Length: 440
Image (cartoon, rainbow, N blue to C red):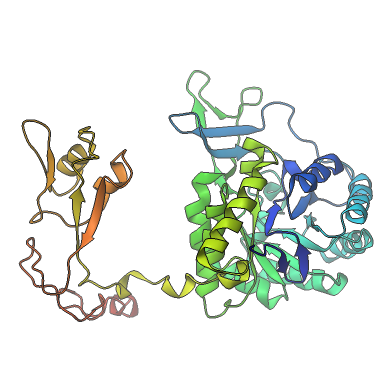
């Protein structure tokens, strides 16, 4: 049987599936239910300093993007950090950690970007026995307008400064949660590393407006005639999250920095993909809010079965395995040629591939009078659009041309050598990086 036990930066848990800091981890009742359902750990919803209470809106807090079948693709929230008092949260954290010593419990924190509030709150958190803290440098709404959250995470100097304070006043692991609302994710990641962070987690939510009420001409969710930008999460953000995780994992300055992957994890396969790109564990929110806490049981059984089938012993055996194969465009092999092929037996003759290729691509699919669709190899550029729009899985596939075959579109014979864009004779610029050097 696969060993799913996790040891992430010294924080042990029964499995690598943690609940992210969000409404599902806002109180003792939820967290106990989560542990009983099978979650390996939780990041307690973000705590703030003891003072005037945070007040959330009492109207709608969430907006959504749905697929055609009403499946939730993305969730937008305008909720702030916990609106429960610091004392009550700390008492509950201490009780939960006492009763579930083998499960991970990390506390998310957000206080003003000044040393004194951090020096005050960190010893209080340490007294609870929690396993570590996560610094919320990502919230893009509400708190950011108050000089916290993404307002800190977008300034590498602030990230480094606050992380140093935390390492000074707190003895347990510190995870820095990064905002995706930045042009270069490596800058705050490197700053967190310089500040002494034990790990980074990413991504936090993406700044967004998900819909507009066209009758009221107002963004949704709508609160008494006004709307606001919020934080976007869910399956739709997974590609963005994985790219940012991979960028940190393959960057020379941050290579080896532990990563907790967040963003659209809904299935065991999502988790495995994040781990292959360098994440040591994953955090989940939207999937739990959509399907309930017991969805983790499917994640656990699926990941365990896949690990067994692959012959791995544990998750650590494949963490980061895909990172060496994440490259930049100029290093791709331009002598690698494929062509689309349509399986006539599984084709349902819907014509989607023909319409997409004829109208928006390379006119490489032919339709006969009796609606038989075939690929014209001399026009096919192997863009893969037909594969992606076809409603029947594996009806259209891409066949690689072997060495010695002739590409009918170009008339070129497939060579044995593998040349990147930098070396390829069809490269009109020579070295494409030269334009950067020339400032063009």
